Amino acid sequence: MTRPLKNSCEVAVIGGGLAGLFAARHVARMGRHMTLFEGRGMFGGQIATVDEVDGLAVTGHFSGQDLAVPLMEDARKANGLVVEANIAALELGDRLTLKDDAGRTYHPEAVIIASGASLRKLGVPGEEALAGRGVSSCATCDGGFFRGQDVVVVGGGDAAVQEALVLAKTSRRVIMVCRSPMRARRDYLDRLDARENVEFVWDSEVSDILGSDGVTGIRIRNVKSGAVSELECVGIFPFIGVEPNGGFVPPSMREAGGYVATNGGIQTSDPRIFAVGAVRARYGGNVVQAMAEGLTAAEAVVDLLSE
Image (cartoon, rainbow, N blue to C red; front, side):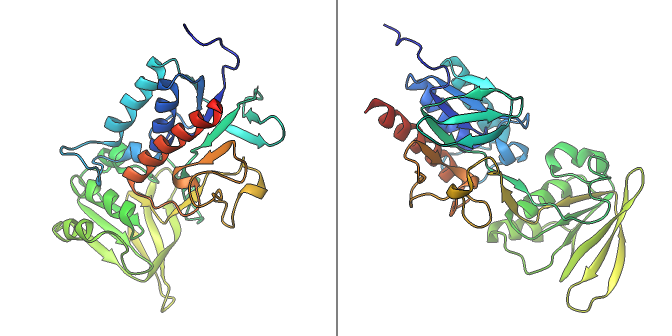
């Protein structure tokens, strides 16, 4: 017999990245009334833009969408509800309260915070004005617009190198602007070294993005000498780190930097609330870890509600 419907938002999963999708799928499949909130319009989070996901313990090549879409479909098939809205506030008390950016209110019995993180902006002139007109955060989505032309990738971590590898397939030249030594995985760097059309500008940061109707170049400053120079390009991809999407979480539950604090695992200071993935303090950043945390949170929530 089907369990009577008491609360259509019995479990709220906030965020549709991999961790959130794994949590949502498993909560729904275990028979709980689950609502997934995702307001960015792209399920899978940052990995949704990745052309080939590394680190999976399975053979074959998978894009971020290859992983995200089946999880979303499974959650829907298990009668999970998807609300395409951002959560604006999470309020504690005897009864948990969520408010979304459309002004709607929900009272879940348990919450899984999986809101992830967003790419940090350069914060330089021209960045906002030229967003979508040469300033991009997705080589897989936008790389084709710069076929046979020069582009810039800012940063030296895994994400920056992955973007450069995608762009190097179609762009005439990829210039990596790095403030400090590369931090990416060794195998990523080996693949980058094999690309003859990738160049580096070391000890430098972007101070301006140039152009009016579209990007025409960048102005860079050497952080050691202070020397300023300009580079011509038609596209720029900043990958200089991330910031947690946790502004809706009560300040008492966040650490310095905005990350959600947990007890060494995934449970927060409120036993009804769990945090997984990139929004959680001391998250390791591995794809497999994101999926494992989502599953662990789902099981913990179901155990909690069964007590």
